[in-house]
Amino acid sequence: MTVDTRQRMDTTMPLEDTGADFARLLQDHHGIVATVAASYCRDPHDRADLAQEIAVQLWRAWPKYDRSRAFSTWMYRIALNVAISAVRSASLRHRHAVPLDESLHDTADPAPHDPQAEQQVRALHRFIHAQSPLDRALLLLYLDERSHRDIAEILGLSETNVATKISRLRQRIRTEL
Amino acid sequence: MEHDDLKTAWQSLEARMARSDAVQLALLRETRMTRVRSLLRPLVWGNALQFLFGIGLILLGVACWTRNPDVAGLFASGLVVHVFGVLTVVMASLVIALTATLDAEGPVLRTQKRLSLLLRLTTLNGAVCGAPWAVMWLLVVVAFAGLGDRGDAAAATPLWIVWSFWIGVAGTLAAWGWMWRQFRRHDPDAGAFVPRADGTDSIRRSQRLVDEIRDFEAR
Image 1: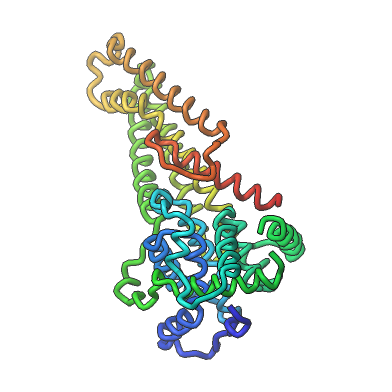
Image 2: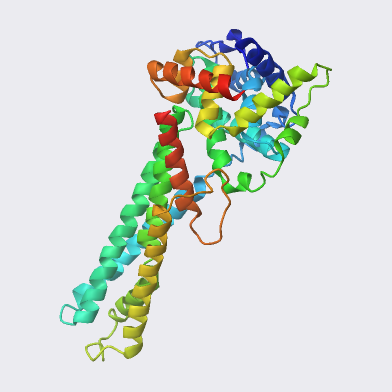
């Protein structure tokens, strides 16, 4: 996600337009939903369910959305909360028999690329799925190049704490990847 | 992996994830929105019923012990049913109140801590208001008996009631002991949660959630 995705809503928008605006913003930021769903679920059906659940929860929370704040930050909070909670539910977990590399197959890149780059993508994919749900949230936000302030706001940590955790995370990435 | 490689790998992976056929947000139609699912809804309804049931127990208990102040067994049964009714109402109220504070829009860590607390509370609710039914059913029957004509109520307690009572007490203690053991035991299978049929899933899930939050905060 790029910085331009952090667009803010027009606070003077008429109420009747909010449904259409929600659909537009959801479409503009669908990458967040897709990334979070794919990071927390290997099984394609679970992923589809989770993406739907995130979208439904976003719609439910939409009337309370504070338009003076960044949409993507708000979206991340809900997406991660829903994903972390869903991944713990037995209904998703007992279907979790999809091998990791096979789950990457499911999202295979049609464009040809060199084997080393492919290996790195697979290693990163494995690393993401090896993290605990909360660590995975931090990793996703770090990889998405969110600012420390954004990460602090999404996760509910202090900026100092985020900086410390990111520094340790970088160290782990260096040693484990 | 160096930073540039990591960035390139992430961009490639992110692009694949975004292309994933799993995400079909076009399916998000108005009809679906009207059927919003909520995992917590059954919990709230269940506890609302528990609340009403608790009120019923309080009324039954009070009616029994106020009518039988001179019959020790009936008086005690009424009192226990009354207290158990209060516990049932309090636990249901706590679960409903905590559920109401859950907010998917909140910061992730805060929401997960509240979920963890809710999971523990529902587990405690099961232990406090569920397990004792191995013996409470008997006290409720006795309390109902205390509402009618006393007749032989003041006579010696029938043997089957005494036996049933002590068997129920043993069953309740065994259930509590099993739950306590699950609470205390470190789960070596923490990385791969598999549901079990022994009714201890919520205990293990709450333990796992607490462990995850603690590890994340410590790291």
